[in-house]
Picture (spheres, rainbow, N blue to C red):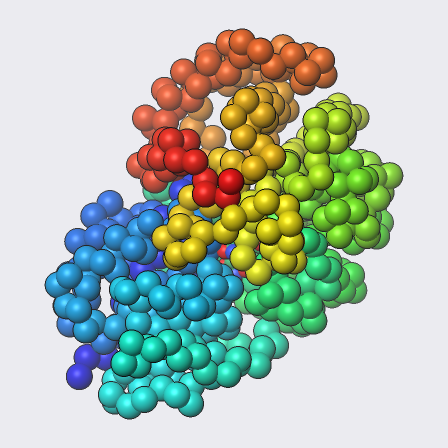
Length: 504
Ligand code: B12
Ligand code: SF4
């Protein structure tokens, strides 16, 4: 019997490529138990379909990790291709989407098993059953099929992060990720869950709200080792809310300074917690290599923030902490969600004014915008029918759910077009620094800098008609695109723009 497990990570439509942490996490117990693991990441593998088909020939099973959205397309493509050839070959889906919608996911004919929530122990136990041919009824946290029926075992209690095994980073081909992204970096996770419960967020549904974290010493030891071992220039700490324990954050910063850490790192945290950091705290964090704090500002309208259940956030502290971050040399980076239920033109313009005000008063601040996307498991989904959102009734129906393009019943046709134009102008009006290396030619940079001036004027006056600057910008981007690695993003963009997202 084979001891080989193949993992597939479908393309997530971005050139900000690095190793999928979820797969590295579930691989460790398998490796420790003597299994061999092969990881195929679509983003860095041009012939990914053939590679998977070749690798599964002598394997025990295939595991796929995915979130809601376009990753579903390649999951379906691969699963169908395997089943055509070997109908009985076991296919296991894990990660956010199968965790949040296990029944609908398992209903797909080409899915044999789903793992809900943390997969470290559940997958190992499941694989052992597949290997021995025994029934997995006693493996908690999974779903499977028997005689055409879907069977779900009881939920698996959540493990604290400190009790989880280290991630199998050695499986990652960092050279290939660097070729694709232009930078050599990895994700690292040091805490689980978030104490808040924003209406659009799925976190509580999978990880609950009990924040728990690694000790500062473990953070320092592991990150220094990781970056040295794989020669990484940057770590993105993907904790949902890194700053819940400020003393731990200070301890980490002091520990990294003491260890002479030479890498950059970035974190995600809520605006209210960032505001608690003093200038001295921020300077210490900067000395330790912290260069960016990503925060969910989400809207410039108090009414919309209330609807989002984000009462813990206030605007004055956002301004103050943006100033302090910049004074310490750390880039404050904010996310915005447009078109949340209840946001009309007035609230949207309030948000645009807020973005422009922050960027003007604190140059170096940056904003990333999305369109509200109703995700399964988010509190707002309970009101889906009330707000007029019809959710897909099949696994494949979720493939077009992507915040870059989402169309909503209250945001359709010209209104959707207008918002996309507004987002495009925001993108060129103020600088942003993506993780992937900037591959623009100098001439492109200069022209784009020049277009930022009319873009700001347009945003200020709501003058979005005849966006010739965007046309010019797109032409310039097309020239850069040829220099970029051939990831899926462009193909997806066209496909998704053509398709009407099925929530009308
Ligand atoms: C890093 C990250 C990204 C990176 C991914 C980079 C990469 N190379 O992997 C990037 C920037 C590309 C990204 C993009 C997006 N992301 Co994101 N992202 C995250 C983030 C912050 C961390 C994910 C992570 O690695 N966690 C650490 C690992 C160890 O935990 P884990 O993934 O939960 O894995 C465990 C289990 O899920 C399970 N498991 C995972 N995979 C597998 C596989 C198998 C076979 C098994 C058995 C088990 C299993 O076991 C693991 C260990 O316990 C999460 C938030 C979070 N808290 O996790 C959001 C999150 C996953 N992203 C989310 C979203 C919405 C997006 C975007 C749509 C955002 C956008 N504006 O475009 C895009 C979608 C991209 C796409 N594919 O379509 C949502 C997903 C919601 C959902 N319903 O699916 C999350 C949960 C954020 C949130 N709170 O809403 N993201
Ligand atoms: S603060 Fe962030 S991680 Fe926490 S619930 Fe809100 S959106 Fe989710």
